[in-house]
Length: 479
Image (cartoon, rainbow, N blue to C red; front, side, top):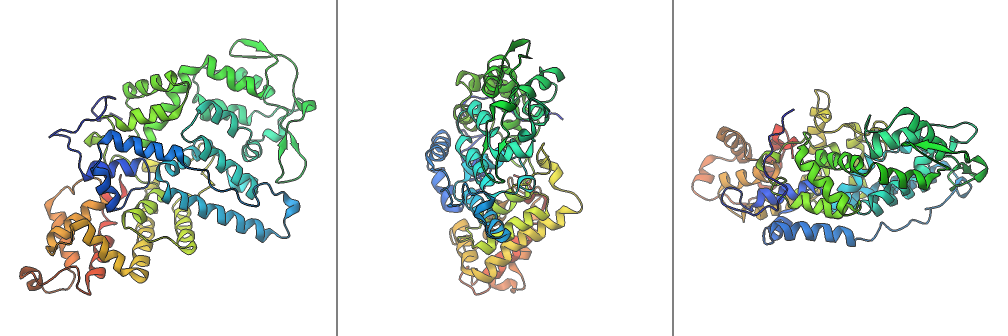
């Protein structure tokens, strides 16, 4: 498909044609996280684009890791029953969602890397493995990509999921070696051969010491293949670290382009601009595979803030629900709220900790079909209904904040619509229909003579009805 995006990798400098406005601030927060409430958007407008990007990235870099649970290294012997393990997994999934809501950029990156370095909880089942894998995703989300590759491959979750624990000198297993090439570093058919995979599998042997289920996986020298291996045309007694080091030395450019292209397609547009990707890769290489400098360059660029990029991607189920929660100023979600979000996202095809397969969730247009679209409406209604039943004043306060407490129903309605969609609606009649929904059954004379305002007892219901109308518009599904 043709990439219609314009603008270079040079920093975005606002001008009359490309103003620094609420829409662009929202675009930044939606792509670098899961949206923002009106107060955060207003504060962002007070900063320059570059300063705001820097503050978001610096804040993410300064964040502590999620606190280690008491069961972080429990083995099966620590459990009295299966219900304990199930409860721990539920707790950590809730914590993961809360972290995405509280720490948008790191949360968005953690979700991205989860869909890159895929493991499936259903395949390994241990709470301790789940925690250790998630910790690595958080720890390296903005860090050294080479060390990220090194660390994630030794997590028990990955060793079990891609059969590393079964990969021995006596019976090599190629699963992890193959995905290390095809999915994690280089991409399919990008500068390697089947023989490289076979030899790499031999070099990755030895991590087979699983003495107790859910326990650590140790290195066992007796299971390591000590014979010479030839990878990328070089022969040596290569082991795990050699595989990582040699790959980044000998295939640095291919790795940089592959990773930057994947980042571009997720955070910018599904149709990659190869010129921009090449410039990102150049920065990535110049900074020795540190992720933060390349991400700063991308998110500060005039290319990222191009009008054609806004609304170019379909929200994933978690992105849709978490962004809606953030942008409605939903109060601190309860465990029940979080469980509802996780359940609904899974029903829509995004079961957190269980991507579709080793290639991850395909994303973008694959999220929507005739079966899932109505489900997405129902999922968003879960948020609206919860707000209306439990926090009706939040709906009113949200409308006041977005509209500066206007008593002009047409203006309030338009501003609420614009708050939830990436661009203006295509036709003025769309806004007129939205206004009709917002007015509900209140006689028109109350709006014409200025009697109506957001203090009316019907205001919360009106805002809820308008939101229910908005979530069924195609624009709402995009970001």
